[in-house]
Image (spheres, chains in turn blue, green):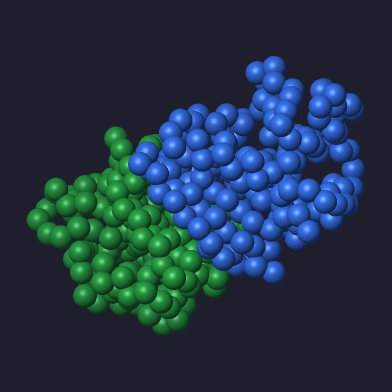
Amino acid sequence: MRKVKFSVACTVDGFTAHEDGRLDGFLMEGDHAKDFFESQKEYDTVLMGRGCYDFGRKFGVTNPYPALAQYVFSTTLKESPDPNVKLVSGNAAGVVRELKSSPGKDIWLCGGSDFAASLFAEGLIDEIVVKLNPVVFGSGKSLFSGPIKQTDLELVGTKVYDNGVVLLHYVVKR
Amino acid sequence: MRKVKFSVACTVDGFTAHEDGRLDGFLMEGDHAKDFFESQKEYDTVLMGRGCYDFGRKFGVTNPYPALAQYVFSTTLKESPDPNVKLVSGNAAGVVRELKSSPGKDIWLCGGSDFAASLFAEGLIDEIVVKLNPVVFGSGKSLFSGPIKQTDLELVGTKVYDNGVVLLHYVVKR
């Protein structure tokens, strides 16, 4: 069974983006960024909520991860803005379950927080990889925006970078 | 100048307590707890918001840190429930500024999150020590509940415990 890994940058106060989707304040350069790009080799598929996908679209990027099979989950988009990105308009959990049970590498969930909460609530997220940035936002998009149950995690790896980013790798306990 | 250190347990999704103040889900035993009690020797004074102080009061504890000078900040309490705890009803920032400029050891801010946000916004918190517990709550009291500005932190120390707690020690950049 392929794993779904929610790998995301986060502030010390638990925000993955500003309320309007901006990401300023997160460190974009350094060894953690190199490791992040290296880690993408674990995956052959990426799952994006619409908010996450729209972040790139604002800059004209409609094919953000060309090396991966790309899925955008949206109930409002009418058609995919790019032939390389598959639009999933309904039954997100069913589609993710089918992807997990089909052969392939692990699956990267890159956000957004509403979509992540819905997949977490369905028990479809296996691991959480947090790139904890040395910053507080005070407000913004939470790691999970939406109802999820209190859930224990198992810490399976950490890495501390010179720039103050801390990588925290957790397995979701069921 | 004495430092104010906000030292608090936190979930991976940024909550320091459940919405009703409960703390279940946080690990209370282990080496991180021993280190926490050891770290209290750095302080001679503790600052508590009312929500933080009330957590102990629910269990009949009105003198939670007898080794420290204790201050509870509240605009609703009429008098201190315990002769060992000083009630500050107004001008919280002024009182904390005065404490910081008076001689003594460092000052421990133990919460709650509204009070912490107000002190952070006033520039009165010097360091943040997060005991990151391997759990997500999904909702609850945020690290800071209240308006604070986006602020960079400097990571000055980390410790990873066998039980999955990660201690993260930050200096607030100004």
